[in-house]
Length: 245
Image: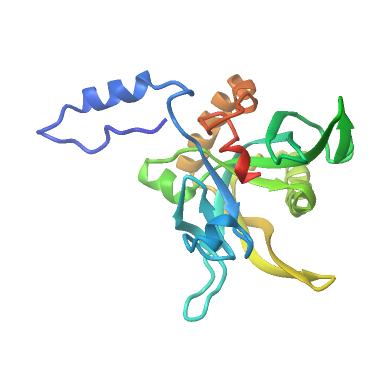
């Protein structure tokens, strides 16, 4: 899908570049994971990015989107949806070590905390969209990203999911739309954090629809691969490392 041969060059054989890309497997390529940074996020504390920005965890110093800062307007996240993933991440409460990850249905199907075989476990439910960025599709350099929501943040997805469901009932595919995430500050019980208000942005172009359709086909053919990792992120796999959860 990522066509590295579009720009012709008399000095470099485009066939060689394409051949290398074709030989990559899902175990060879890292997939980005987009996350909305909070004030207590490690990357914010390390001054690699700002609270209220959306970054790729593989490259946190580049803001994909951000809230309105002093002197700058908000840059919302625009995205195309390829598919969704729902899964649980389990950690040892006492050591904070990653234990396992497995597919899930909803956040209420399992206890969030439980003691099993003498181990105190904490389970976190994740809902993720597998997405493409329109600006990358336009330039022909698109890669799939995971836009992840966990625990109580999963509720941010419900409004958009309801819209998509109603679209489907009317025969309108999600591939036909570009979606948007506006970054907003929320407050409750004296605590403040950033959330995403998800909505439909615009109709997708023919190129965007065709690109999403192809990735959708690949995603469905290899969906199990998205759920396999316990280590680094690969294409078709949502985990970066245990410390990010």
